[in-house]
Length: 347
Image 1 (cartoon, one colour):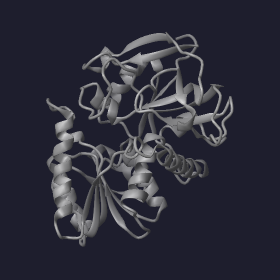
Image 2 (cartoon, rainbow, N blue to C red):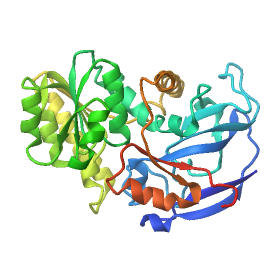
Image 3 (cartoon, rainbow, N blue to C red):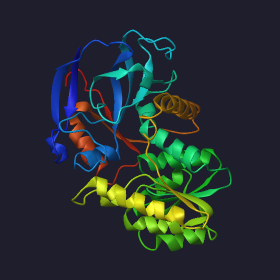
Image 4 (cartoon, helix red, strand yellow):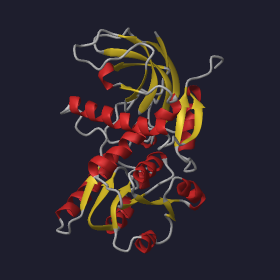
């Protein structure tokens, strides 16, 4: 079976992406061949092209952190495996490999997508939805009536965080640039411009502090995120966007952030700080990781199907325009997810 893939050959700009055609083997034991209907652009690809993602594979490789597609062929399945069928729509977290028109995956990593949920809409909630749901409900354990801060509330993860928090009865203060204030308000958050004295503005809105802060920015600003917390509050750090364009080791940036969070956890003030890693636990407890991911995505797809949560798609690009998709995602103007879809037959 032929596959068309987008390859990142080395450190470089979006223009360095290449198109590759290769033959895929037939699915073996426990595998599935999936025809990709939608993949997406995440912050991970932005770091990977700079060589700064902390556990990225060696070059060259196919980017694509997640996908939604249809099963074209199934290999023999192990006893007790989750029932799957040819023609079924499924989602998968891949970390790499999603920017292709066909992929060969482990069937155990596939999550069924409910009937009636469009592929591109479901795709916006795979990485972003799983990240947001787990940070809210498994890490911060928010409760109805809480107030939280979501940095980058107009972005891919941020816009989902806002919606899931609002669905749980949580008040959200969402930071964004001035041009995205209206979009953030439409999601149900109280918009705040991240420029200026952000800490003072948050304290005006929540004088006693907030129950949780979700910070993908990192850098020096994470100190203010810590100061926003109420006693017993939780800081969830899940990225270092402020250091994206800096030269040097991405691993060193993460280690510095981890050291700071660890130090804060030692302080006797009742607050806690966590670094969120979506893949934590898969290597040691793969079955549990897969079961929880399946549970979380099923909840999220149900909310999407009911209209409680909506998919925020900024723009879609055909596969052969992956470079333009990556460039647009990095522009800072996107509201929601940038999605990559299959090429039209003429392309």
